[in-house]
Image 1 (cartoon, one colour):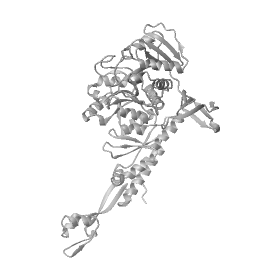
Image 2 (cartoon, helix red, strand yellow; image 1 turned 180 degrees about the horizontal axis):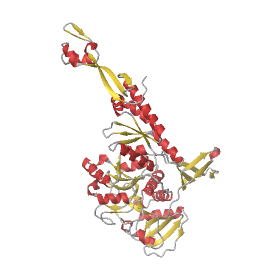
Image 3 (spheres, one colour; image 1 turned 90 degrees about the vertical axis):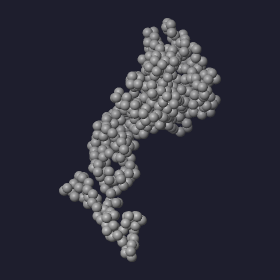
Length: 527
């Protein structure tokens, strides 16, 4: 427990919460004379605001392993980041007798390692550093970003080559990615650059090094010499690195879009997922099973996301076939957004059960069952999903009449349900315990019957287990027998209107006949 009190008007403390559901991350920004001098990041916290500008903080931040920040002597942006890091933290010099290392410094879990040469040509660097006691869990390349449009931008991305190796690395080889780290640094950059002139984006996988076995990523300042040496940009990137807080969210491989992966970037901002390797549309045709397999293996990925609108149907189908052949799922954006906030292990169990029950179906996860999952996980309980069903014919008839009412009903319950490939409701419901699933199944059955009552007379034969839907329906044959041919009079009679032909009045009752439809159901109550 930490208590912080603001005593002077020249020192301001700001507490900023990351506005995301199910995420408890706070930043404490310390200003002296309106200049930002220090940033604290605290995750998984509760902050209680008290009177007089006092707040208390309880934190259980996740610990992380060693992180090597690679500084290039030849890269001006890298030198900018290095100088800011040395300025804002007390780094201890390290005595390292390694030919590849010019200088090394250490601060808590971080090491700064300065090297000769450009970052993109550092294949084998992780092994070389490990031989001299500088092994790490993550490698961050603090680098420059160059683009023709000269935009002011801060980027993060994994490395590797899908085909030839024009800028370092080896052909058709991907480095080990660091999805959780990339997500954390991206989110930090986004917050710290707010109200500044810099864009923030993830980039698709490109250039070397490609043979690193230690998870790595590039953190870059772009896109011209002016930005590379910009102290504000250097400070934002430096603080984003030091604020690193590695989470544990599901990881996707991204396919499609342009080089800056806008759909993947937005999805990572909005939901609790991370991205490993990402491939833009212009590279999709050169991806084969080998390189896609590398992407999943070297990102420790859970599923794939396709930016469907950015690719052709032929490309989608080919990628989906390869991904599924490798044993992974392709999730749509709606699927990802719906599962947001649900622990991934539970998502996998849920999707596994649903796939067993309806292989061509798609899962729909309501907000209610998300809360149930969250509560169960807080109690350190791993709930098992339970299945209940209703009459498929009953559900189908009710859906024909009022789908929106059924959607509203299901959305308000603590269950997950299935939709068939054609978008129609499946009769399968899933809850986290038997009672919940059965109760919702019973309630849904009654809701379907209430919808049918608005259009039919209902009769239920309990012995037969049959529900009969009785209605009067316009009979074209009866109308013709009375001398009425098809045309406007048919339409009028079908609408329940009276017509006159040859001085004869024909009322709807004269051309309607009773119809009866049967549905097999069990153990229901009909008023």
